[in-house]
Length: 128
Image 1 (cartoon, one colour):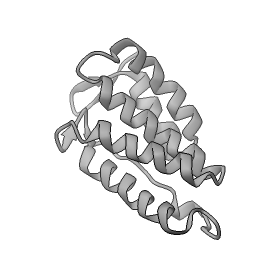
Image 2 (cartoon, one colour; image 1 turned 90 degrees about the vertical axis):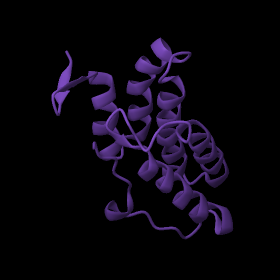
Image 3 (cartoon, one colour; image 1 turned 90 degrees about the horizontal axis):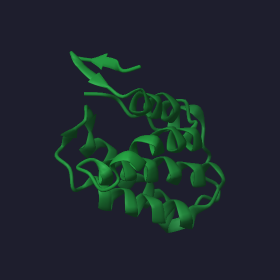
Image 4 (cartoon, helix red, strand yellow; image 1 turned 180 degrees about the vertical axis):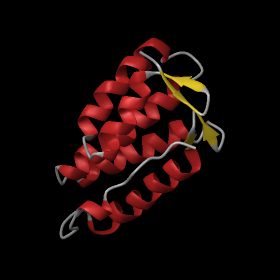
């Protein structure tokens, strides 16, 4: 099954990534997008999918209170996503990169200790 967005078809695994990510199901988001990445890891969207998988993985570590692994994945996210134009595959890549940078700043000075995560603080990724 393939869904449409603004007249273009989008893969259900790609859509599923956003659905899971936006519900704070970061591990599941990583898993669902891995299906696309495995098919295209050496193709034009390989680094893009990998960056999104790393972004979700970083938030898995945030949820578990692991600052160092989260920071490492946020850095890898930037390395992969910054290769793409500002809007790619209906995602505002600039916004996703800003999100990763913001979390890097949050994590690096004092780690996650005392950093309360409530519902309104969790990230949301939107289609353009």
